[in-house]
View 1 (cartoon, one colour):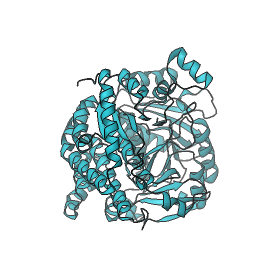
View 2: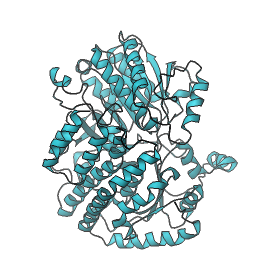
View 3: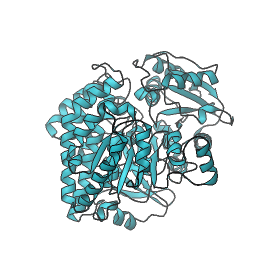
View 4: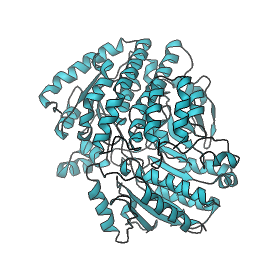
Length: 569
């Protein structure tokens, strides 16, 4: 891969400035057609995309784990593009963006906008899963409807050229972030790839050719010096990045003594607007209840998936499991979890630095367990939520390390204590997971929804992984609002948000406690089988490919093969 010379950046930024002027003259109908062209180009490049991604992550082409690359790669981009073009169609036709969308009250003078299921296909493909976008407190429905569409309500008022510093772990993140800059922020964009994703540069260029041909997007490679030169370039008006807080602070404040001095004086090196998604230490709160052996096994696989998906190299991987010390089935669940971690398919610790991060976690926790499956998988039990020096609560491991902490109590008392611990003890605010038996949920009543409102996280998932929120195109994705440059936590701002909603606080996802057919046998309405993103799903590769094909061109006749594959997972 050829590195983009720093000396060429002036020309590149000037092209994007020219593109911005043309973008201001591009009407909504044309903008929508460009999205459809991106969808077609992405579908055409999907096989090459997944093949290259599997090579980067050292996955055998026939491994079911390749399904992760389909679903978190071209599938995620295609579903987002399809949702976004529908929003533009409504804006272009003068139709209320939220017409026909269910909007209900949420705790604390908030509104909840249902974004999953959105249509009949969602009801079939994601049966049993729901997602809502919650507004900030006090937002009225009139204000929500009148601002939906963001900058596309005034498309001629463009906002300059953005730099997108792409993530290196989940390969739909860079293109999705670029599309958000172009359509939500109304800026043209240069994408600086993380070196890990450099082998995908040509794939991204193929997918974005309809946009690069119009000087709306540029894609560059290279080391930190290229990103730094772009961030400082006078023609760049805003920056968005996905990565670590350390990288964010280096961009904003600088490094070394100069960076320390800039932070101390409150004078950032970067004075342009910057938005970010930076990960964190995500909790998995398991509410005590009475579970069957099958429930214990399934939810152990669920927790293992939250940690082991992508070898644990996810910004929203579950990291701290919070269990009830008084739960009679606590030990049985931990036994099932150890087995799930040990028997999940083996995969390399592919992301740079993973082995060193695992080694550091073990060095600080001499009693760390090694459940097996791969040499890196690590279980840290007995963590103390009252210990201010516990590094597992403040260090994002970005690898297959799972911590376990316990709190006393049951019912609402345990839930409230777990929410407080997640808010006060764990670093970051990107995503929080809760797992609860249907009887427990029924017993909590309204209190569960009120507890969700108390959780200061950008995505909260109940009986689902917060990664479902990432993959829901009309959901929002990002940290809980309110962070600042000098305490950025999980970042500032949101992405995805295909409805282009304003005044948004979080996304709330719910899923089925049991897969079909057990769900049906227990009187639950969901007929969802084991989800294809589970690391234990044997047909995830085929299902992911079929989902991607369907997302590119939704057709009823393609559903039987898709359902057949999913049901065999």
